[in-house]
Image (tube, rainbow, N blue to C red; front, side, top):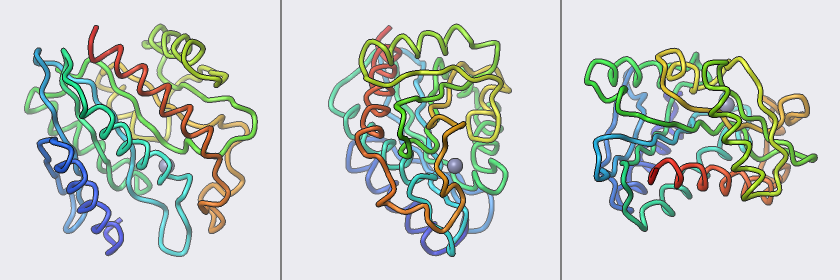
Length: 232
Ligand SMILES: [Zn+2]
């Protein structure tokens, strides 16, 4: 957070979203530390929000799985979703400062609650660590309140992907928590935590350890769920 690389990443994502027709916004919660997000309006004044954190634990370590995997999935979904129009609007949200205490998502939720945007978010997906795996299990995490939604996500995984979904509750530790605390319905998709990357927060969290076919299945799951929610 706050490094040159971190700032360049915010600029890169902003530019990317602009190029795919999103109205791009930025919210800075510390000097030189910003979230960025893109909005595309729908026919009704409600939104599906997709989020991933763009920061990693620090320069001496790497961040391929945590969380270039989620950030790249975010951009790919932004690209794919830009091709059509939907009933609901889309918010593609790249959070910052996740590793420093969910700072970016907490800041966004606070502002969005004040502006009235938060209550218009009818569904959200968080993607954090989605590309290290050997058993095909994906965890779908939420709070008890949204267990039904997690079950629905599981059915989507079974219908559209070769993933083996497991529901985990309660929610902890990532950018879905501030949204769930305010009652926004949503889930975290994350690699099976019991068999997570052995390189979690370590210098060996590098690209060559990733399971790209697994990542693509999670993108497929999140695309399918988003498309259902965008049009229902
Ligand atoms: Zn993370």
